[in-house]
Amino acid sequence: MAEFETIRTGAGARSAQIDAGLRAHMNKVYGTMSVGMLLTFAAAWAVGTNEALFATLFTGITRWIVMFAPLIMVFAFSAMINKFSAAAAQLFFYAFAAVMGVSISYIFVVFTDYSIAQVFLITAVAFAGLSLWGYTTKKDISGWGSFLIMGLIGLIVASIVNIFLGSPAIMFAISIIGVLIFAGLTAYDTQDIKNDYLAHAHHGDSEWLGKSAIMGALRLYLDFINMFIMLLNLLGARE
Figure 1 (cartoon, one colour):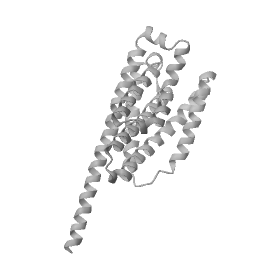
Figure 2 (cartoon, rainbow, N blue to C red):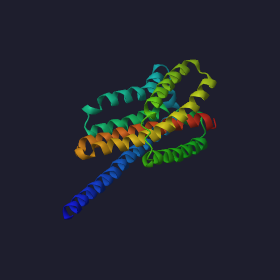
Figure 3 (cartoon, helix red, strand yellow):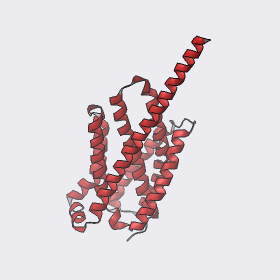
């Protein structure tokens, strides 16, 4: 009996340690994501409210570089994450967040400040609810992954095509479908980040955990930003 109690106590202590580690991991994910969001909106505001700078960056070939730079950086980050240290990965993420801000700076030219703030609040509430559900639900939603990724690829292709077509109807459809896809991804990614930590926590690899937190922050950051842009296209009041 004493031996059983010792085993149970040890298991309980280990479980509590993993729970504490998970909370710290998720706090780092959300904290890193939040810093990235601040950098994004600071960069977007700085460029979007400076007419001369905005005109310079969104003219000619520079426009295309600014528009596609975030996408290229995401692919590069995903491909090279294993070669980065945790500190380097974090710096890269912050650099990416600033570049993303420049890329979406047009929102301060196209939409009113009030509607940007209003849609940001709506997105924040929706994101918090979806992420909380993904974290706490006992339902396994890992099966959503392949469906959502296929939808995301289709959305990216349609968005690129519509850059050249400029169709308001296609943009409207993209925005509605995009909100649904990124809402699903928010819950899916949160659960996947949690499960990924639980699957590797016993390894005690602090370097891997550090990079995993940065990658998790990137995933949730992209879910938030894209859901915000889609909702802004649907609900935002134009200048």
